[in-house]
Image (tube, rainbow, N blue to C red):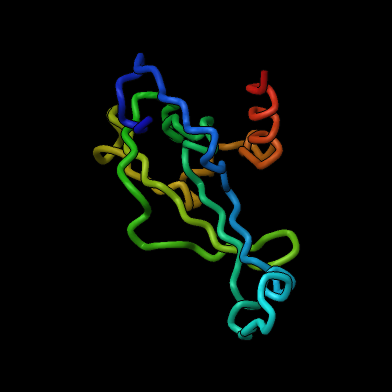
Length: 145
């Protein structure tokens, strides 16, 4: 369901055949290519691909409120126009791609528009409230019959 749909709209279910991938996409390792081809064409550039983290309300429903006023009256305005951002992961360098949020409430200096990859978006968050993969897994497990 689109993030800007009416608040009382009923979301459509995803077909069971469609895999739910993300929010972290990891490039396939050499072993993946080696096991699927008789003579794999392995290029060094594949080893330099970074994992990509998608910061989107589809994966993290907690981020759909305004970071400054806490209002749920927000508008999701598309992907970050500047593209992905380099971030420091625990074990390696990674990339993050975020979505832009606009708060419909009034803010000092006009309407607030901020990307989920911008440090301004996360300033007001306590470190234990930042959404993570563990939270997503718990939500998915709770939704199972």
